[in-house]
Amino acid sequence: MAVARHWRQQDQRYNLAGTRCGVCGGHFFPRRLMCPVCHRKSIGKLERFLFSGRGKIESFTIVHDPMTGYDLQVPYIIAYIALEEGDHVLGQIVDCDSSEVEMGREVEMVFRKLSEEGKSGTIQYGYKFRLI
Amino acid sequence: MGRLAREVAVIGIGQTRFDEHWNTTFRELGIEAGYRAMEDAGISSRMIDALYLGNMSAGLFLDQEHISSMIAEVVGLTEGQVPSTRVEAAGASGGLAFRQAILDVASGLNDIVVVGGAEKMSDVPSSVATEFIAAGADQAWEGLFGATMPSLFALMARKHMHDYRTTREQIGMVAVKNHRNGSMNPLAQFQREITLDMVLNAPPVAEPLGVFDCAPASDGAAAVVLCDLKTAKDLSEKPIKVIGTGQGSDSLSISNRPDITSMRATKAAANRAYEMAGVKPKDIQVAEVHDSYTISEIISLEDLSFFEKGDGGPATERGDTSLNSLISVNTSGGLKARGHPLGATGIAQITEIVQQLRGDCGERQVRDARFGLAQNLGGTGGTAVVHILEVV
Image 1 (cartoon, rainbow over the protein chains, first blue to last red):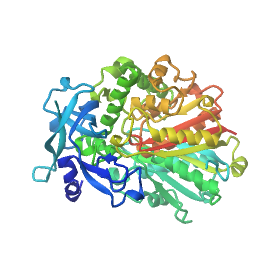
Image 2: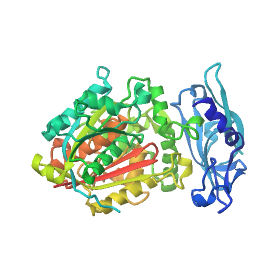
Image 3: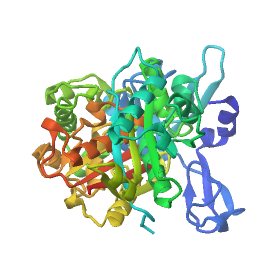
Image 4: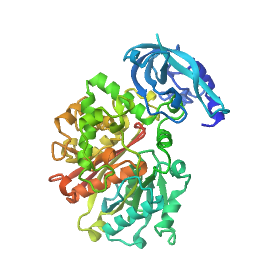
């Protein structure tokens, strides 16, 4: 992904910042440009919504065959997390042994390095999660 | 909603073997499948009104875009400037190209249309292929966190096991069944049977899924010739009619769906196709479903309403989806054993169904097959296409 594309998503990735619809009150992550429920009525009425970063694991996997650039992290844990506000997010679970991860475990967001583009390339940061 | 303006039928099919074709180019694969389909239909190039191509990513795999023009040129259609269109929806590119060709003929614009699907994946190392396949999921909100395509299906698998008590063994039996079917298909990439022990003890890819839960990276092409039913009856002794076509879309990322144990796009596409065809799930004798990962077949069996929610695993264990049982699923070997050259898969599903309905499948023939269904998925279910075909 191009550097500018990462840069545009910094607020969302650094802060777990999504969108709240000023019409229906629904919230969404990642950020939306239009409320999927209220459609055109929501334009101009969307506001930044900060998620607490707390949630629970609804599913998880331990990845052994990684994406390019993630070789050093193998094996890494990816979880499908239900945030306490109700929305879902995908993220890595860190700071634990894979045997500690279970369905339903509570987690909280932490700020970590996500990936880097080669030895002299840019480094991407963002959210991961750890067990509470 | 829900009617084709003109009846459409398949009169020719062709497929290369799906494999790692080290000595064969993308162009050669396309030509082989295309000419086999034309020979089967008994038509000449001059009779073709339009060409459609399903291809996920020649751009990533071969650094070549604009393959609509490239393939039209190599099959000799550019002298007549025959319109050629490439269709892309990740793994559903082939199924979606087939649908576009149907809509073209049904509209009355064109009478005879060739639709092909092709992908060449073995020119890049497998780790790079993993990355390109993941481009069919959400790069910004899944891929960046290290999520590969199998890892997303692994999340679905664990949740399905948790919510419906589906067992790891039941999931693995999908691969055993599809390899058994593939052993009877001379065009399949893998023509050897495997055991459940092999599936369960295979190296892990993304737990709980292992190597034998994942369709391979493949090279291959498939093609079909479509035309209006009147022309079909003039040209063919065994035309196979398309009686239902349905498509549905859902979010690119699994995080933006209410449930990851089911795919709304499949349900919508299936309901639209069943309604158009006027048939029910129990009327279908043979189905090609999108088993890019073993869990995907189990979820699809439920979403296509062949079995109740949560019964996909037990049904597989009971043998209800084996050859000539309740419903014969993935008689070709499925994506798992036939192989999965992304854009070619949706077309290869159609060639299998047509072959079954013609009664030409030899030892893997489904008895008294009258209605066949094909379901093709893009990514984790952001796109689903379902077609229902019938013997005329």
